[in-house]
Image (tube, rainbow, N blue to C red; front, side):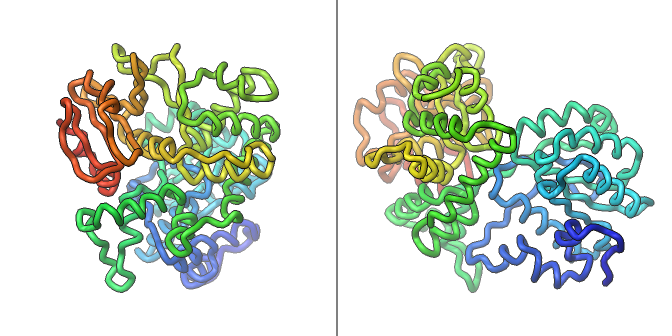
Length: 455
């Protein structure tokens, strides 16, 4: 197989399948790293590749979006698709808008006609105003038979880009947005318990509670990023060098937007030292040692857009939406990111030696983030606080997370005011007390099934 002529090396380096499928498998950095990993989680992309469409895929950096695209390409090659009809473009390597347009036009000209083609544009947020050029080329009909998958790690960039695609929507080409999430605890269990020979995983209900607890404590350290999961399951710890990868992503994204690294450190320090507390933006800003309140709010929103934190609103029980005037809560999107930020702030000497990330708050964040994948998720601020509240079927379900060795009567004080309260606890077993349903937290998270929410 000969690769297409007259293409820049920066493009051919990421499309080694133009040489041969074997070259692609052995020399592509994402594919070779995937196949050499001891624990392999296969992310799935719920995309119909049989019809021309534009798909937008959002997810944190370093989670595996590039690997997912390359794996999809390998699947297409195995199905017999022409290698020259499959293009991968690493947008972080394109420095000008003109170069981006040139690349799109090269693809369109080489894939005109009736055959289906596939274009994977990875991390488009690195190209300013990319959507304007993409829309112009699309409207010229150069990708009429193309399945396009566009990935990004900045939610605001992808959201803003959709304003350029109204015509695309009318033609039925733009599919719904997709989001890639970190590995869940249930998926973590499957990876750990899989037999390397038979690839059979132990059913979660057959894993003793004590063993689940041991593994959940490992999951709290690793979070759901594939590289950290492999490190924790093979070596039992996360090396500082891996934390640096995530630190560089966070700081780098701010520097590319011409934001101040020192102010970022101050905002992250305020978030991590008040983690899990109720805070208004102005109250949180009191912990920031520089800059204005609007700048702090901008930095917090940017951290949310790039999937580092979630800003959680209190629930308005009347409208079942956010209570705008009430305080917020801040959670890291994944526990690994909390430890990476802690590592960064220690280098900047912003944390005292006695500081310890509160495990109970990290666990609360894991639960809140997991439920937010399926439901609008808030917390309750009434006479007493309830950690999590999800909106479901025209109502809401209050959920309290108790990560203590024993549950006490006071833990039910606020929950029992609601007819459908749920308490997730550290202890084994389930039951009902004062009308509150009780479940073992690790048991419900061990299965990717939300039937425990049903009455």
